[in-house]
Image: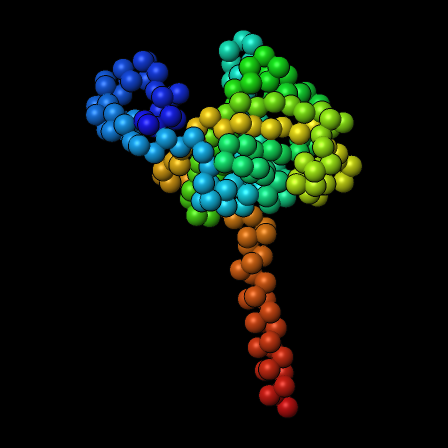
Length: 206
């Protein structure tokens, strides 16, 4: 089976552009790969559930793409199975542009980035919005009860995404960045070691 991500994204115009810029032969080999990339494996699951944010693109009725940032606790985006993602959608700026776009066109694109390791994955899928009143207790439990670290924030709905295709992207031009949590993993042991050395020094000096 050829790579499905390329089948969905390499339009005739894209292929013509590749040919004009001299990369068509390279991309033909990419297209012909036997790795279909339509089902998430363990590597993808670990990567996705280690993220605390991602970017979500939807398509409006005017044809313009709309991109939003989604964030939460590490692992708030869950992999239910090889074809399904789900996450609790918290109340935001009350514009509901992404949710509204899904009523017109359920196609979405997600980009997830691991900045420290300079890794990213692109994912295409079909999303549907499920009102919180219609979400099962089991699904809420999977989502950690729909809790947020921010005060006065509540879950309004759950978004479920059926994976159409995904692709690991190259690491070029990803600037390494570190979250407060990631820095703490490095800094806290150093602080502890400094405190131990200071205590030892104070004990040795009469």
